[in-house]
Structures are given as structure tokens and as C-alpha cells.
Length: 108
Image (cartoon, rainbow, N blue to C red; front, side):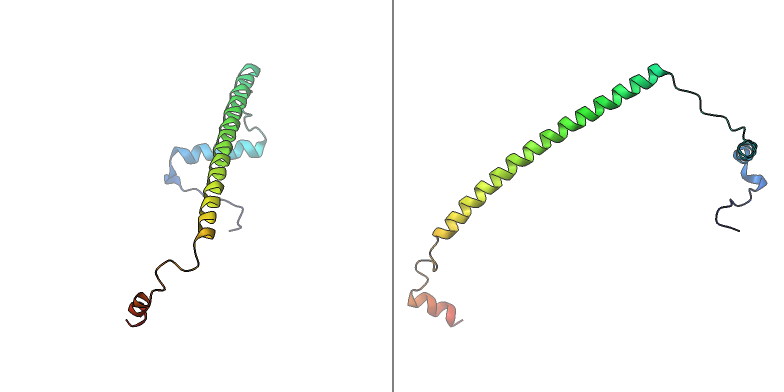
């Protein structure tokens, strides 16, 4: 069976098969029912609702961006503080070079 053909319907498929068959026949005959037109007032309401939803989402995204920028600035500030502390740390921690401590670590 070619890929674009639907398999034949069986008789036990019920009323859905009958409706499908009728719809296919009407489509072939060019008599498929067009969807009912939507009233212009309803279209305007739908448009206003969608516009409102988009505006709310845009404001929400702007608030999230501001929060992310504040957090990023705080993380950069903290990174700079820790980097400064790290740069001030001596190369060798005090007291580690004491001969007794070195012996303890080297002779285990």
C-alpha cells in the first residue's frame, strides 16, 4: 500500500467510520462544509485578550531580566571580593614550613 493512502476501514469500527467515510466523500465531491465564520466582535475580543497576554508576558520577562542582572552584579561583586582575598593570601600558609609539621607530612 502506498504511504499516502489510508488503510481500509473495517465494518466493526463503528459510527466513527461512517462519519469518516461521509467526510471523505464530501471532500472528494468538493462539498466539504466550511467552518462557520467568526463574528468580528469575537475576533476583536480574542485579539485584545492575546495582546494583553503578550504584554503581561513581556513585562514578566523584563522583570526576570532585571532580577538576573541584579544577581549577576552581586555574583561579580562577590567574585571580586574572593579574588582579592585569594590574591592577599600568602603563597605558603603560616606555620606550615615548621620542620616538625613538614616531618609529620613527609614521613607518613
